[in-house]
Amino acid sequence: MNKNILKINEMDKVIEVKAPIVEALRTAYENPTYQFHIPGHTKGKAIFKDFRKLIGEKALSLDTTDEFDNLGTLHPATGPIKEAQELAAQAFGARKTFFLLNGSTAGNLAIAMAFTKKGQKVLVNRNCHRSILTGLIISGAEPVWICPNRIEDWSIWGNIEAAQIEEMLKKDKDISMVWVTNPTYEGVVSDIKSISAVCKKYNVPLIVDEAHGCLWNFNKHLPETALKLGADAVVHSLHKTGGSMSQTSMLHISKDSCLDEKSVEKALKLLHTTSPSLILLGSLDAARANLQTKSGLKLIDKAVANAKYLRKRLDEIPNLHQLKSDFGYKTDVTKVFIKIDGLSGKRLESILEIDFGIEVESASDIGVLILCNLGNKRSDFKYLADALEKIASENHKDIYYLEKRKHMPMLEPKIVMSLRDAYYAEKETIKKEDAIGRISAEVVAECPPGISILLPGELITEEHLPYLNDYETLEVVKA
Ligand SMILES: Cc1ncc(COP(=O)(O)O)c(C=O)c1O
Image (cartoon, rainbow, N blue to C red; front, side):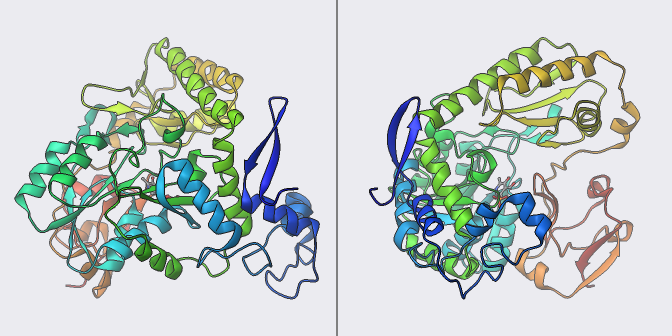
């Protein structure tokens, strides 16, 4: 068989798709060697029996690193791994694509290490994922916070206006990079085309954390990817919605990017494990290949159609509301954020789970987030819509909880010390009630969505307290 070509049966026709890592793994599996190197479980032979039974001998025998012959290396990218990254770059429309282990988190850290430095001002949206904060703590760059629009009814951050960004760039000439998150965790989409035009006008690179938008390049009913709209670098969590295994993501440098990919390569070499899992890398290769087959593309069509079906059913349920595109912002149709009158999201989540065996992506105090995945069937959505219809018609109210509880804070941070200096300052741990007026020395952020309630260097105020119900103590800069 032609090396690196995978023959797959697609709608009764055999077609050829390149998936070099998948093919190299198959060859390694079919040609076993005497192994005297890591991983020491040696193709699963030395692993706890029950675990082997659970996940299967074949999976364990494929658990290899780039120490194995003929599988290529991740740093530097060689062999099938290099080829797979090149194929991914073509598929996503990038100049260069890097496969990431440790998720988009690794991508954001690498971007910060590669493209920012101590004291440099970077414009960042206040609702960024905590991995961006970690990256800026490492590099020592100074975030200048931009607060997106607030969608008060839903207690969530919304879109970012290009005009807001322009105003800040005009005001502060030292800002030399813009880093935005799109879409938001709940699927709200900003106008990246206009944001990119502003960045070009002020000659600053634009980075887009598109962790939740990796399918966008593959379906015309989904928003357009930032790679096409002028961003210089983009991260995608393929494992979130793209069909690869947990922890796997991609970092793309766009075709016309003003950034040098060699700096990212160097940063990733330092950040990545020196024992990359070929199963995880192979799953990225497989996800990309899948998205380029007819059947893979059909799966996205189905997910969009299922989302539309679900949304239509939800529209018919009295007392139930769903977040939709509105004047000023669009949404990704496959992310369905809902709420039911008088019922907190947390309570709704537990009713769905306990009474119906349904697990949703997440719950806030306000509502629950449902992801319309590639793998869900229409019958799953029928079941979910029926369950929601039933819940909305019953008396499950938890008004007391709703009144007592505060939602995701949407405060403008009062920054009194540099992010990095506060993080590395001498600290003390004190009772949260005593922390008012003190400077936070830690990132306080719940996952999901990983958006911080408090940042290092932020002044702790009374306004923060209602959002810190789950914390008894806080780490603050020593007085
Ligand atoms: C916007 C955003 N960026 C980055 C990340 C980190 O992604 P990963 O879990 O792939 O490391 C997340 C995770 O939830 C996220 O929501």
